[in-house]
Length: 415
Image (cartoon, rainbow, N blue to C red; front, side, top):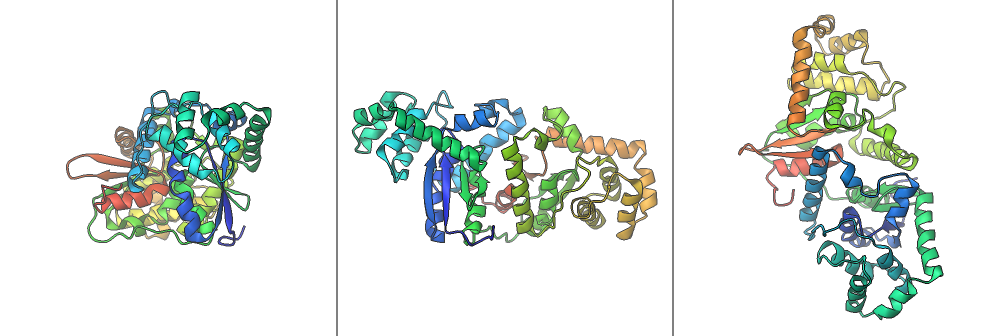
């Protein structure tokens, strides 16, 4: 699709998703800024999850470090948007009657949807019960008994089922999802991409002055780290410190599949490919999926540590290796290729490749990887803000670089 040519979008949601709740507080303003028409589209998230064979309570399946980060991530977005957020007892709560109520009352859905979201995520009202649904409907001026009775009609049940099937057919695999000209944007953290697709210009944090040091943990095997590497110096400046690690060993330590992309459903994998392309375009990184994936990266990681990851030469080597693998499809597990890359930036590539087989080089990579896991790293890229009081703040993913940059410049109230 041509970015900036669309004039409308669909917002797919269910009340049980905290990310959809956060997005619901922003999508109408986004539509107003871009002059676009937004169409609210309720769906039953449990039905979507069944279709893509995803656990109904995904959060319960996460490794502890990742679950902790996800909780912090929700808190940060809620604070950034000044949105109250409290997880209710018994989450996730059944939302089918509330969703059907929207269909009974009819469009526009958002006024009532906002009330149900507030009941779930702010007031702790059990909208799985008829009593909870009735309290929301009554507060919004509807005949609660009549609406709830109507939610049991076959045509209303069929309508919600049809909407859910439509979402699945479009490639939606989770909530929230915005669809612009058939293209799926998943997550509250992709609203900036939705705005770009609608011709808008999202706001961006402009770093100024001194910043708290941030560790940039990465492995050359990660496409997301490759994309982030293209913008990390611009966004984080001299505060960033390059920290290589062996991602496969991190995954093993925290109990994650060695190649998470391979575990995705077909629809999520299609979204991930499109999302990577969008991120790469925004970062100005000419990503081209390599013919060899996953790639064994032990050699270039050891060489980088021998050079000194956070030296001028180390940063140049890092950028060159990422480019060689993710743009030029070169085999960076090959000693000759790694030697050529190092030699091209003025180093003795042959000597470095030979030294990478030493016990010291092996131990150095093990130490770095162990330190990453100890710091809470569970994926790449990860940004860790090292505060003066010894506390650390972890931000996972290149799409969290803006949050990390803001935090490094003292905007802790928001980030």
